[in-house]
Image 1: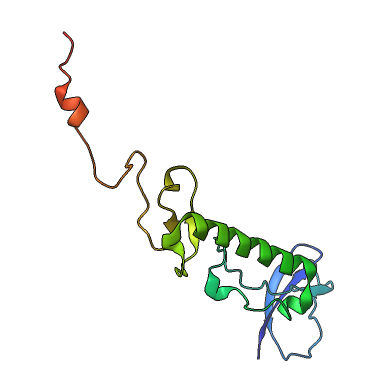
Image 2: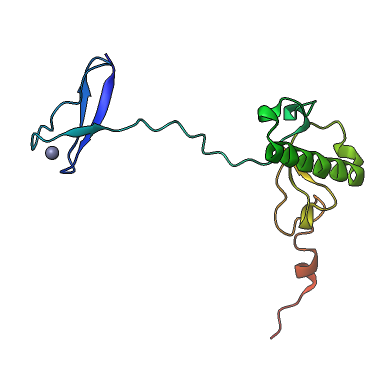
Length: 139
Ligand SMILES: [Zn+2]
């Protein structure tokens, strides 16, 4: 038998194991009427970083009942991707979603799975100490 969550007007919340069709039990505290608490759907909690091509529908028909907004949204995403690939040919055929392509990722767009550049890292190899070594402490 499933477990149900009930809440009473007095604030008491309790769980009852009962058959699916059973009526709401009275509150164990005040005997008042309780109401079933709807179980929360499991939320993914993941932010979308944009769809990659393999998740794009290959036809615009039948996408979400032809919802205009949905299709428009997909078209926009697709056009965005096209522009990005025109600018960065190395992205063509790469199905990984592009996470960032502005600022310091302008030259080399960040794709899912790529190592994240450290601030100031610039072009991948460090110049640590090169400038500082020459500096003599002022006395
Ligand atoms: Zn109560």
